[in-house]
Image (cartoon, rainbow, N blue to C red; front, side, top):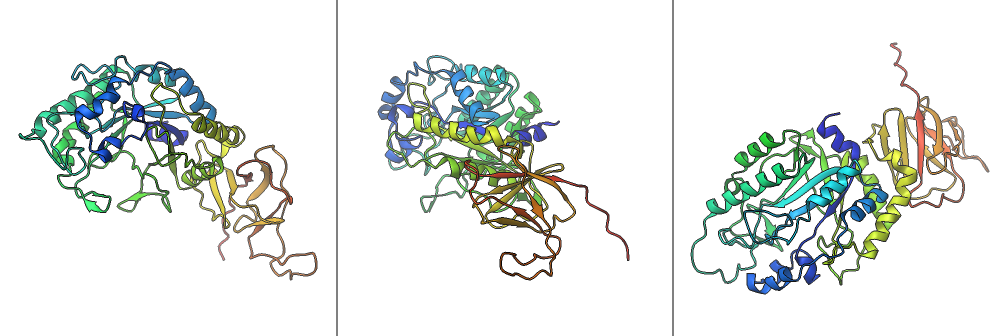
Length: 424
């Protein structure tokens, strides 16, 4: 199994946005939105002391949710580093990254790092329309070349310090980017980061590492954020690996007042929809300033885990199917196993076109109980207690009146090999 196949096999991961902004508890973009100076932001840096941080507990919770990899922010846009970088004093008092990566590896989970290309603290990072100081830039010029050297050196440090990394999530390029309805002035991209050279460094240090698509260069996978693609993603008409980045409540970093959490059922459907379109789901948590994942997020993850414990066969290693799912349903498939996910519970039956002659057996995945099926004569008229026949080639699954007590019921279908068509 190569690195891309391993990435797609895992399907479900945890994104962790964490840093000094957790002290403010107003999400990770609060410095941008409130236009804080370094001096004003410093109080959050000074009081970031995650004394309850237990990386093994975070990883255990991710595993309980059914996640098989995780990506953590080594540095976000505020420039504050969570590892002992020797290139800056703007860093946590101890290494917060290494223990998390070790905890992932101890459980056999994939280990990924997020690193911000943007840095609102570095004195040589040129001010632009996203910078907190955009309205009143300080006097004096700034040298992007000096910042670029720092950026490249920090990436090199991360990739030589912690052993093999599965995924590097670099964030982000914004030439011509529209933010809050306006094109961002001074937006930065490949020329500013020297993305070709940075990518060459990454490949030379860790050839198996997967890199995302946010350096203003093509990457190993694409990263739709906060939306669900309507179909498998393509680049120049060709399918590409992709990873949907989603929050639980609209905030990436810890936001104490934001209680707009998605339901367990919605997130399970989001995961299924992603896999049905050949993608991965990277679901975010924003731990608080003391280093704990808040109870609401933890409860949601455990709820997803209860569903995953019974239905993981329909997620791991699965992808899209060539069969067309009925309305309000999604198919995923792995080999000769086809999984029908019922987003809405139909009355009495669900009809599956094209599966006559292919369905050997069907069962509910949550308990392994048989689901009966029939292939009705297409010419059968509806009469009294008998429904009309469906189009030729359709299999009808006969369902109980009450749905199983799971967030999304799944029917596992065992497929027979397709029969070769006979020449006339």
